Figure 1 (cartoon, rainbow, N blue to C red):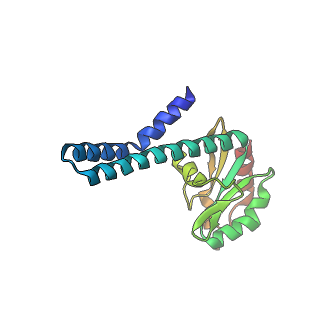
Figure 2: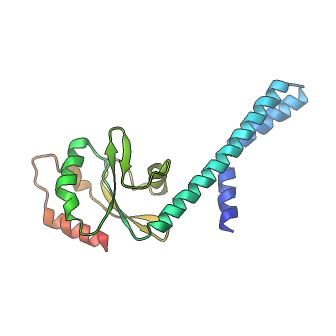
Figure 3: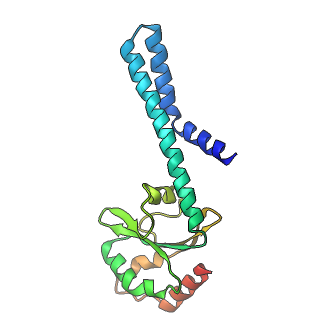
Amino acid sequence: MKIIKDLYKAIIDSYPLWLIGSILIGWGTYANGWIRIGIGGLFIYLGITTAINDYQLDRQIEKWLRKNEGKLIFFYATKKKIQEKIKSEILPLFETNVLQAYYDGPRIVGDLEKINYLLKRIMAFNPKIKPHNPSIIKIKKGKLVVKDELKLLMEIQTEKEIDKQELRLRIRKACV
């Protein structure tokens, strides 16, 4: 039943391509426009390939979520100076092994698996997960749950001192 729902979702997501293709084919048939029929066929082909690719990507992400059930992701895609300070000062505060997601130039990377658009889909699944908003995320029952938003880490590059005891308590609480 889940497979049918996912296929249906993938087809509905590519609906505009199907619609445009059908209209062009209908118009081309009515007016003897072979070029319109051909372009309409291309749109339908694009709709089919988009639906198949979306379905396969959703399967890969679900498999990845099941495989990493219960793991934590520390998402800290911020400015380079802030990231470096977080890596040196904050990452050692984590007692458990945590997956990381951060900027490497213009791309968000990390020690997550190399699945195309994985991080974009992760951010689409949960609107609380966004760049320049450090957070601790837990994979729970195939969903991404934001355990704590650590916005105070954005001030780590300023002269203001961050209370590491409070931060350590928040990290421990999020890791449970």
